Image (cartoon, rainbow, N blue to C red):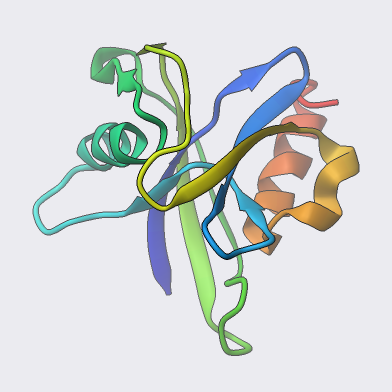
Length: 130
């Protein structure tokens, strides 16, 4: 099980997604915890590293935990994504290993990882994603 924390930034029926260098698949931004980190600590650090924005930790709101087959991994290896929304300061821009950002909707399901598809379905059912 790959355990990750992710930021859901939804705007105008679209969600901000990131594509890493050398990859062709998009993910919701986030990453793995470092030892001793809380979910929110991980969220703040990962989003700062990947998107060059500062998450306001006091506004972090738990959305849900989503699981699916890990993209590009052996069959049966799953990823668990614990997702939050949060206010932020700055303008999201690719940083670190991120090559590109894109605003995606459910029509882009073929461009995203399996766990991101599960997240998209949840956001669509909640009326937040086109």
